[in-house]
Image (cartoon, rainbow, N blue to C red; front, side, top):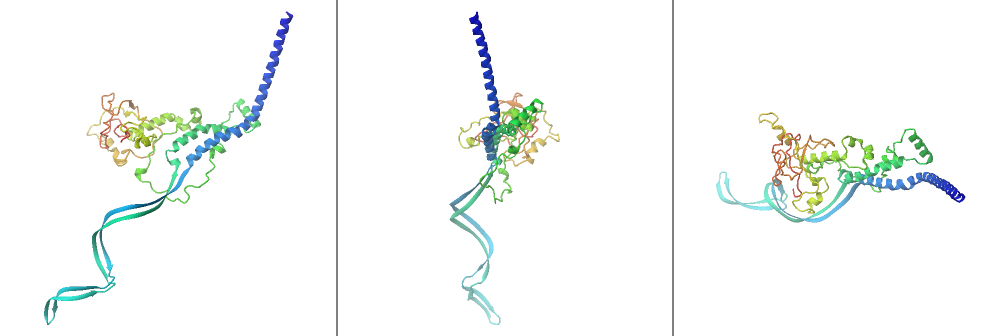
Length: 406
């Protein structure tokens, strides 16, 4: 029995000593980690995360400024019609010998008399030119074309901005974290007192994450205010960046989540673009694949929208004053030969979904549940003169999205 008691006492003492040592080591590790945590934050985490985040911000805010020299010879072959009145000057005397009938008073008439004249050098003669001037020359072209392109104003802004949103909450929290042990103790005290700090608040870094560039862009360029040709103006789709972790992203963009979040806003934007008859390839990233033969001709780009059929409504009577309003609404927007004809080119709102749309998951010419055609034949796209379907608030006919070939 004494041996068993001795063994039990030894095990008990060992467990007490082992537990004490483990707890002591754990406390020491926590103290050391607490002392080093601020250094890890300032020396490791901030430079890595903030450096990556600021690079995305700098890429988004950058501007391409490059001069493209054009040196070439262009063959010019054309005929220029020349019709004008002008004055020519004689460079030398011009002798004239003409036959005339001369009447001499008291003498009589001299018929077929030869008269010799000389037009002096430097005489101005008014002439009427009407001739065709053939031109067949090699025209020397020497141009320096300067291109100033702010990347924020291109589609590159969207993916870069989304990368920035992924890291924005993390980098703000790192810069709002305690700088030293006293600040950490104060933060713990605030937490215990029920006053948690706002780690996502603006700070000096978040207000100016990118310090600047090593070279200028746009300096001395005075064409930024030139009017862009109408056909070259991009349309706003209303699509917003997806962002990062929703719980953190909501703290940075509350206005987006009040409206249902990025997915709801983007779904509504896709439906609006479908109603405006603007193909997905113009804003979903498949423009190059669609237009440069990377997809088989006649196939639809990935992610093509289903046809949106507005809710049915009773048709207007022919004598109803509003019967022609919807059909004519396209005339007060843009010319009928433009993409999105019939839709005002105002900035697209970020929210708003057509009331109770019915999604038809079939091909564009499949029939709707009501028995009618959900869209016209792909070979016969509707025009602005087609009557709009009843109940469509936009006044536009519902048509299938454009195929890659169209």
